[in-house]
Length: 226
Image (cartoon, rainbow, N blue to C red):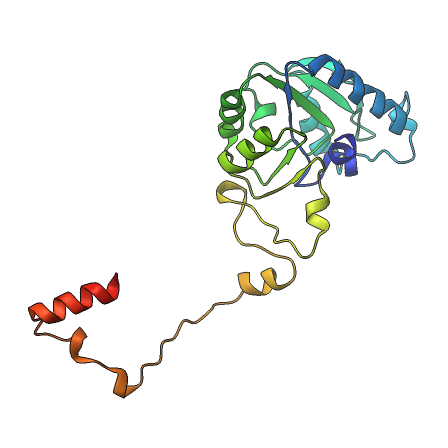
């Protein structure tokens, strides 16, 4: 998850915008994420040769605005002139805030806890039709619920981002997150029009379909259509 979120500093359209963590594993999960960030980027990510910068100052200012919209669990440092924003975890309880309603496109990561499947559905449907959904679970019921009840373009189970790299899988959004599919033959089909044609031979042009419709014709037609 850390790789998926902070790849290119979160500046990908398929980056996981927010984390939905079950309340029973919340504390252990947050500690594991903190530990992994330290392992990858060090105590000072600003000096890390593999930690990217925000694309420009204007966008950096926008990303920084999100930091104040929750309880900082990790990170929070920034340097706008250098377009640097530290990997930042934020506990969010108010789902109406911009951080939960906009595409972040940066390394600020809101965390929301859930308890029931109904909680999950309600949270996700606040911004219905996400481009991607990443399900990290070994629970078959949880995976099935999300796949069957949440509308999203594409996704992964116990991974993230990698679905985009598979040229055999169609990639695209749904409703608000986009339309059409591309990759391989799916690109061709998206930008093509399939012309449907039916050819009827004259000797097959049966009188059953033409008026007048007798009782026998109706009975035979009804049987045929069923």
